[in-house]
Every structure is written in C-alpha cells, then in structure tokens.
Length: 88
Image 1 (cartoon, rainbow, N blue to C red):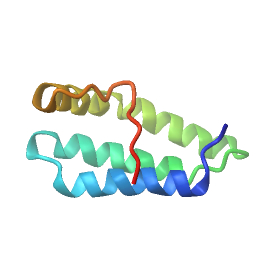
Image 2: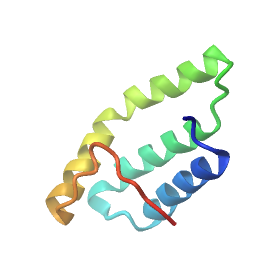
Image 3: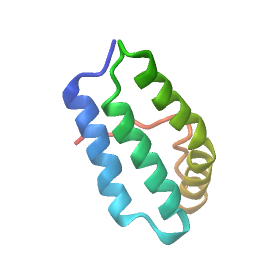
Image 4: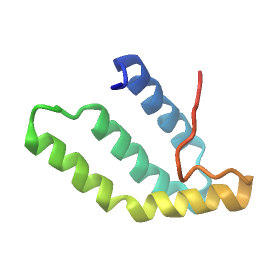
C-alpha cells in the first residue's frame, strides 16, 4: 500500500529534525539522506524523469546511508539498515 501524504511528510519531518542534531561524524551523511527524503517526497510517479532523478540520488547516497547506519549501530546499538518504524 502506498504511503499517504501525511506519512511521507512525517518521515521527512523526522529526517529533518534528526539532521539538526546529527553528530559531526555523520552530519554530511545525514544531510545527504535528508536531501534524498525531500526529493523522494516530491517525486512525480507518473513522470519517468522525476522518478529517475530520485533513483539516481538514491544510488548516489548509498555510501552515506551505509556510513550513517554503521555509526548508529556502533554508537546506539540500533540497526537502522533495514528501516525503522517511527511514530510521532
């Protein structure tokens, strides 16, 4: 089932709030992931170019995602590599 607008906005909001407090060790990585979330929230599913731009950005930020995920696991003991359910 596709995410609702409210769910998408909530996810972007979580990433944006975390971006503001991200430790220096992963700040650039979290910035890149937040940029990806914002871009994904604006994708036009019926526009191939829009979808491709987000897909390209997702590939481009893969290393950032891995670095941030590894840092969170090492520092907090939480594995976010498969995603997490975040509720407001």
